[in-house]
Every structure is written in C-alpha cells, then in structure tokens.
Length: 522
Ligand code: F6P
Image (cartoon, rainbow, N blue to C red):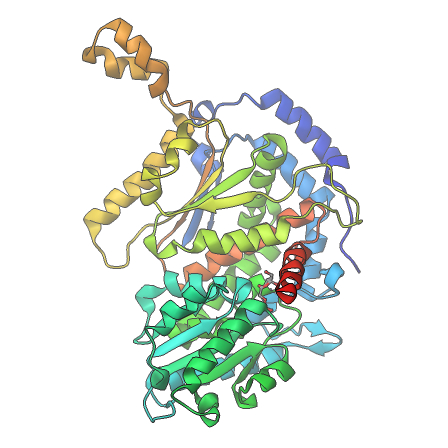
C-alpha cells in the first residue's frame, strides 16, 4: 500500500495552525521563558541525549496543533510502512530500508517476499573480517607490506556520510590514514595521490551504480597511477568495491571476492550504515562501527514507538515546519560545538536538501506551499566570529540547532567550560536579545546622552530568535549514530507532512545529462 496523499494545507489542523499563528505571531520567547517550568516542559530525553526546545516561538497549543497535523496526515502509517519495507519510494519503485541495516532484532523484513536480514548480517560479517585483516596488518599489498592508507573513492552519499563519520570519530581512529576523493576536479585526486605509496594503499571504490562520472574517472586515474608501479595481477590486493553493479565492478578488475554489497532498498544518502561505511569500519574498527549502528537503532526504536508529543525527530520536524511554513523562514542553521563535527553541515545538506527539495507532491501536482529548508552551518565557536552577526542582528529569521557535548574527549576542562559557556551564551543571546534599556544602562557612563542615543539602535539585539539545544553526554560512535538517525527521521517526517517523495533525486539528473552532451561535443 502506497503512502497516503494528503495536502497538508487542506487539513483542519493547518487551518487551526494558521489561526493560531495569526493570533500569536508576536509571541516573545523571553515572555514564554518566564514560566519556570518551561524548560522542563519543552525538553525531551533519550538516554545520553537531551533536547531542549524551550527557546522557540511556541506554546503547548502550538505543539498540540502541530501534532494534530502529523496525525491528520497519518504520519504513523507512513512510519510503519517505511520500517516494514513497503515500496514507499514510489517514483523509483523501491523500499526504503536503511533502518533494517542497523536493526539487531530477529524480526524478518521482507523485500520481494524474502527476508533481507540474513544478507545484512552476512555483509556485516564480511566488513568485520575484512576490516580486522587490514587493521591488524595481515592483509598485504603486492610487495608484502601491510596497508597504511585507505582511499575512499565516491561522491554524494558514497562519500559525504563516511567522510563525515571518519572525521567526527577521529578520536577513535587507528593507525591507518584515510583519504576521501570525490570531486571530478583532477587537482583533488592529484593532491591525494601525492601522499600515497602504491605498495601500501587500499582503494575502496564506492558507487551504488558504478556509473557515476566522478567516481569512475577518479577510480580509473588512481588505477592507472597504481599500474605505473604494479601489474594488473596486483589489483585484487589494492582495489575493493562497494556496489550493486557487479558487472561493471568486474570489468574494472576488482576481484569478486572483494566486492561488498549495496542494495536498491538503501538510498545513497542513507547508506553509511551499509558497506558504504566500509572506510568507517577500516578507520575506527568494526566494534566502533557497530556502536554507531547501535546508536542509530536506539533512535529508530524511539522514532517508531514513541508518541509524537515525546518523539524527538517528530518534534524537531514539526518545529521546522512551523518556521518554514508559517513564519516563512527559508533557512536553518546547524551549529555543532565540536570541531569533530565540522563536516556535519555538508553531510546534512545532501541528506536534507536532496531529499526534501521537491516542488511536486505525491499526486504529481505542483506544490503551492514551501517545502525543503535550506540548511547550512559551521562549528562553534569559529562561526561566532564569522556569520553569527547576521543570525543575531540581520533581517532574516534563522532557526538554529545547537549541538553540544557535556564532556570533551581529551578532558581539557578549561577549554570545555569556555566552549559550553559560548554554546549557552549564543542560545540566550538569540532568544532574549538586549533591549534599549539594557543598552542604555550599559552606555550610561560612556558619553553624553546625544552620543548614546545615536549609538543605541546599533547595539540593540531584538532577540526572539529560535533555537534548539541538542546535548549529548559525550561524542562516541554510539551518540553519533543516534544524532545522524535523528536527522534522518526528521527528514522523512517533513517529507510526509509536505506530501512529497523524499527518497528520489531526479533534480540532479538534468545537469549530469547536459554535462555528458557537452563533453561529447568537445
Ligand atoms: O547526487 C546524486 C546521487 O545519485 C546521490 O544520490 C548519490 O549519493 C550519488 O549520486 C552517488 O551515486 P553512486 O553511489 O551511484 O555513485
């Protein structure tokens, strides 16, 4: 059974939300936060994660109406259909089962009448055994030396996820050096080649289709470079692949035994939980990779089984819809207060914008309301010295997710105290601002009244700028898995509410086709 097809703007809840918005749009977060119970009432927890969404322009009624909207479009039914393997990616005729990849339950998940769990387990065993061999040094290159460098060759979902996770889990990394080649720009691959020794490098070609121009071009270039020192008989020791296209992989010269599976029921941008994450397992070891999956599974179960009022991905999705569709905010910022997460915004840009950047609804009709938000961001505190001026005092409303950790990994307490003081300082400054009176008081002793009056408007912070505080105890593989899955479910929830298909990406095709045509003309 397909997903339901309900125009959200034609629902009763939408009508009520519109009235509610018109009656409350001048609401001030500062006033709302005078309620001493607000933080507790507008916070949710899941193990080592707490999400404080009290600094939003919402009341209990807003949440209850947004939840009513989720119920009216039958989000529950959509979640069940996704998890149980219905063909919800209708335009591509596919199931969407990245959640099955991290599931530890024995409950079968059927695709074409066949349980896919055994294949998933077999792939995980293969990843584990291969990672162990390479990390321990047992896997030898063509001159008998152990591997020192891994090169992941892929783009989009076959690059951004593994790259972001390897960067984020740097603290847990082993002795192998991991590189990521993605761009068709030959200077990218050239810079990486400079650092490699063919005798000790393992290339992981990741491409679901094995036809992607960038990946195949980079893979061929690296193979040719490798063959300057080695022979074609040495390729199996140095090139492995992750793909669904076994024929193309075979033609490239990769040994069948070194091909890791990918499946059509996993979308590229949701695939780091499959063998696409091989370079993660190679970089931090299989146990840490499994912990990442376990964290995601914890979020899956929470998403699947928790009432919408208490459901973290659902609440974050509803808040995003509130700002996007009622306050007409166009963008959202993701602001991790951890340098390890510097690649998270890039990763989320693909996950969010490739999924929900759609202008046609599930009926095939052009949409007359706003869908996918533009997401961007960078790490705190660096971004405070870059773009935060605009977020604090600019003309645009930019809801923000602040992501932080109670503890740092190396335990430099002084640094961490300062980092988190900034985390909370920014949230407060955005929410509460600084009034004319406060500025006046501050300037009182610094000059005459005329001077103060001139300067005053520039120093006022309007405040009332919404944000969420997403706080974990510590950055671990498990908490990272949870965080990524949180955003995955937020994406799906929004897609359901907007009545769009989140799992296709036809919008990337036209440019590719034209580039091919232009290339053929040259
Ligand atoms: O950018 C379009 C896209 O199809 C992404 O969805 C995908 O992650 C990427 O290209 C790479 O595709 P492949 O894994 O087939 O090389």
